[in-house]
Image (cartoon, rainbow, N blue to C red; front, side, top):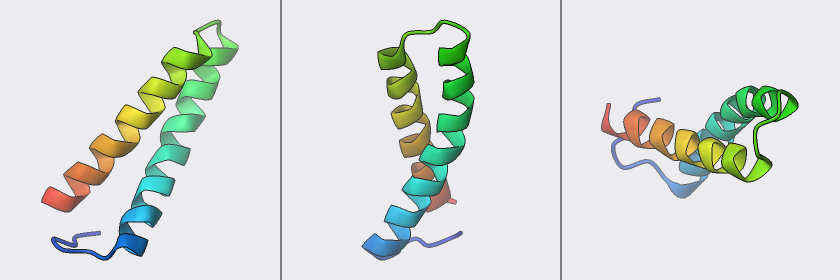
Length: 57
């Protein structure tokens, strides 16, 4: 997904896919006793980081 100057719909799709992927892992962490607020923060950070890396590459 190399875009450089991708449109907002592509960015939204990338963010959604990254958030879903990160959300699966953090859902498991919540099931093991992690704070839901911490898990949400990790999910958001991971999704944003994945989109930024995809944009740069």
